[in-house]
View 1 (spheres, helix red, strand yellow):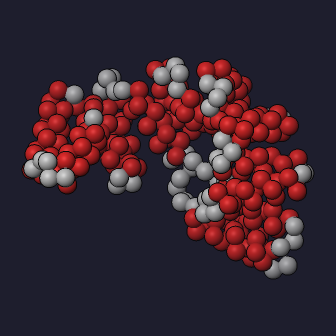
View 2: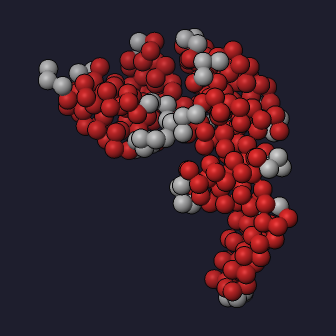
Length: 266
């Protein structure tokens, strides 16, 4: 609501339909009244801005935690704090919060996708599979449902089933780079190098600066013997990879290890 007020107010001000002081006053009044009557909502608003505008995860975490500790937080607060916990590598806390968020949002696929990935990271593959199958049952036309199913099957070592799931996701979203990336990774594990190269090339075309895409493209080039180019790709992947963000598929230390190996004397 605060964001809607702010955007609408700024647009009307820029169009000359509203005094800018009224925009500022409305926002200040909303925050002042919110701190008195709905402080948990204010904490959520500030948490949102801390995370997405100021990129301060620590302050965002604190604000969302205050909202949840009030006992009156919205479903979005649980999802947001669960997402933060996942990004910060606190897997078990992420699972707890995302389970609460999913329980409050019975038809929401994105929160279950993140929950499924957190469960995979925690090694709870049976629960992750239940979550993935539920996603498909409630939204079989959402590519995310098949992506998370593929993730779980890949974690279980059932690579042909993972490929099938990623293919279904691609049929629904052919320009989704993540589908091509994950399909390419599965093909590498199966030993289908030509198919892997075709998918990873598509992922590179769609998202040429994504560190996960760069890492697997570098691994493919290394396997094919183009080691000088692979070394440059690993270096670029490391430069693009935020060290403290755990939302990526490839851990930071694996990119470091790949680059170190590439730089080692033959």
